[in-house]
Length: 351
Ligand code: 1HN
Image (cartoon, rainbow, N blue to C red; front, side):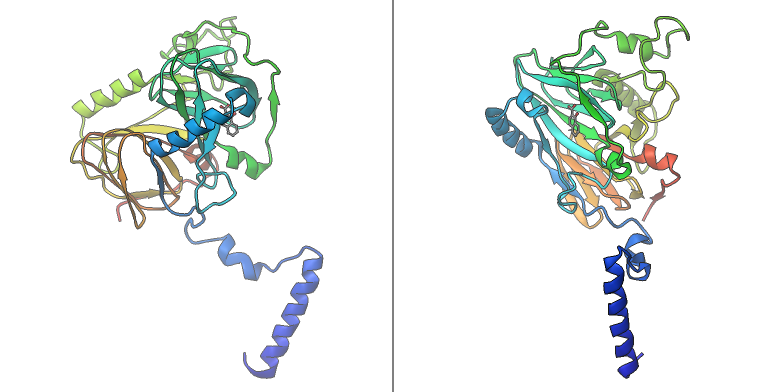
């Protein structure tokens, strides 16, 4: 429309918007395009952090604040496209935690589910509901929501791991609860190693017996590197690689064969030297750690070079194309588990 009529209409609109605003009303016709996008659009671009850079800052923090004082001495990896969100994706959090020899990170629990992927050191532990899981490089350890957990480092070396949590997912639902136990460490209620023996070997305690000590829905919390790496290696020697993933294994919950926790999925993949993966995209933004080897990742329009312990994020619906210059092993976690439950998950293979 043109002329005075258009102007009148414009003036009337502005008056309407101004009056509406007083009553917390907003016109959908101005917002629909950003609220309902044809494809995922809110997750920013790919980003990479080098482990050595994060480590340098972590060690400086280690000189300034103790694990106990900080409660958790962690540097958050915030996606630069999601400023202030404290998220690495719109639904997930990532941080690197340092615990120095002799330190304790006190016992607490919260609604948020956490995974730890060990990056450096040996011999510190996370205790989950009073059972210690001793850490070795590239072990995966879970603390499912509302389970007590504390960390301690009785070794003589710094210990660093990646924390992956569903903080932003829980925030969406405003369903965060947390409490401190009030003691540095949970009493040791179960001998070390019990978890894998009882739940990690295709066995479970007979139902209804006193041997049932873990929550039925989420019994297993320890997925040692030695085990998953061996499986990946054997798979790679006996099989043809999937064109998009190479050789890939998902960590599962033995209680139901599904994802490790209700909101998060995790996997490892091996791409043999010279392997060029076919492009793929998916609605689950994924955080990756380079476990070994080197190569490159094309994330949307961005080219990232990859080497040991780099951490990078692939936002939702960004095309990922991986190339392995040597045998390349990646760990990845995402909110795929939550998206599948909510009927949201999608993927597209190829260009
Ligand atoms: C948490 O409890 C830990 O227990 C680490 O080590 C990072 C980030 C946000 C919320 C809770 C831990 C966390 C966290």
